[in-house]
Image (cartoon, rainbow, N blue to C red; front, side, top):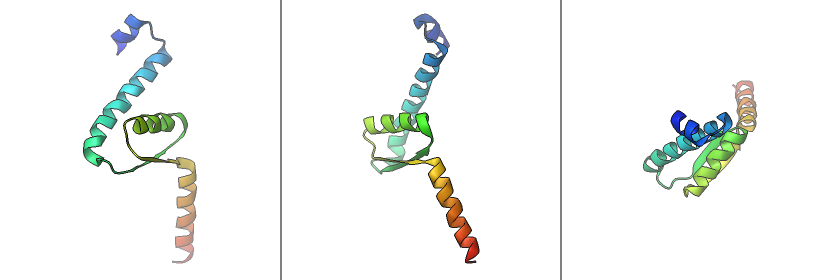
Length: 86
């Protein structure tokens, strides 16, 4: 990666983006064998989550994306209710 960045004159941001894309691609290649065609729940924040979603959709996965903050709030509210009624 470093040599390629130097030879192609990539900026540090460009190199990070390329590395991120390559890592996501490697993950998706191994995910297909593990999950087959099962729909995936994608839980995360902002830009990285959006990049994963785009890559997963392009690779033919069914994806439902959830924002981590909303799920955290829902989980805390459910825990509070469980404690109240225990």
